[in-house]
Length: 52
Image 1 (cartoon, rainbow, N blue to C red):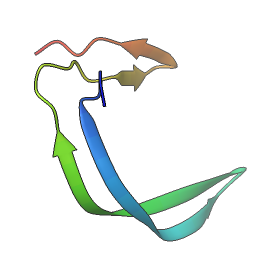
Image 2: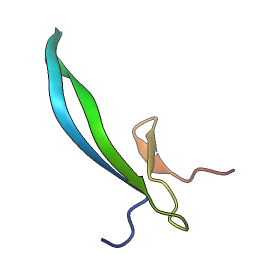
Image 3: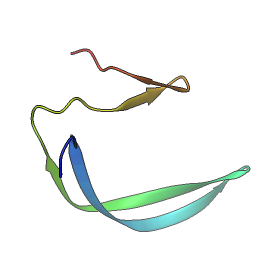
Image 4: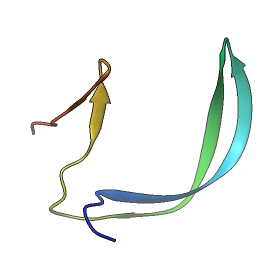
């Protein structure tokens, strides 16, 4: 894998109604994070940089 900041191995725990959408709750089984890759941030209907 390249250009990935985080990998989550999940299973669906519960699906709930959310108006005209569904809210899906996941249970994280395992995860792996990768240094040196900037995270992808989606906020305010735009992709943005995370400044630390």
